[in-house]
Image (cartoon, rainbow, N blue to C red):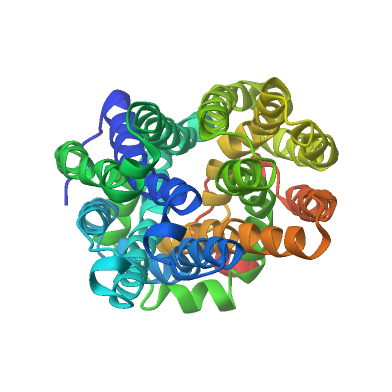
Length: 434
């Protein structure tokens, strides 16, 4: 197995581009769920029920992501990072394209939402194996003092994917009628995936395997069942890593997918105003991922994550209060400021969480933390928020939920070891301390 060093530019491209494409595929589903899927696939339902069902199919993808983390994490820890990432990207592209050609409820009846859920499951499985591998492609190629920086490469894929997905939907909503968007134009973003995925595959196939994994494979240091090792000997790092990401996910998805529905259907704001909020979210998050990495050089990655968590906690109530004004500018302020704290924490947590685990279970452990947090915050978050809104008629319970989860995130970030205490852990040391 080759251990040839890969240039930093190629590492960044392989980590970012593939992740951005996968997140583009994922975000167009979230946007479509908020804007059109309740009518296209659940037309016989009450509007609120249709929205809940639409978000439920969104949640299905989050629920299956931890399973994808276990399955693809197993392959990534035993067979290699590179080959696993090629499979996840290909699976995601196929599922997204098939959603784009899926017949509607009006054409094939109840089979339409069933097939939608099946394809959503495939998307979730693929994303479950994507992120951890993209982070490891970067961090396991990184010089010792640049693991936080390299770990952030994959994190830029999220705002990058959101930015492209939102631009595509914004252009569509401003160039075609609402009826056209409902009937056929919603398919265009999904079909575009067929053009983007080959680019990601080309870049990833040019990557060499990471030096750390190559050395482990040569020494036959792989664990037979990585998932069981995480549950038994590395459970505490898994718990800390999961809670560290949960507040990020909850805030992120409440202020992107959920807010699209809340602002348009509850507050009566047009999509021409609400969709740009996602553009602001993407730009703000992307910029502050880099700011978070820069701050980590002065106050450590752990310190940045802690401050960001308290920022999310304190901003929860003001954010929803600003949305209630129905003023576009204040809506953008609410989302943009929240994404400052999301971005700074998101940028530094990838490298921190990856280094919590020993090399032979790192793909599984890192992926599982991230996607369990995604399931809790991103999968169940919008559903719980919609339920609270329908029961109380107020967004304050949603703000309270955001604050409580952000507090749990802060406590978990306090439990993160300092970088020096986890960097360079060897399997022998880890087992001795287990």
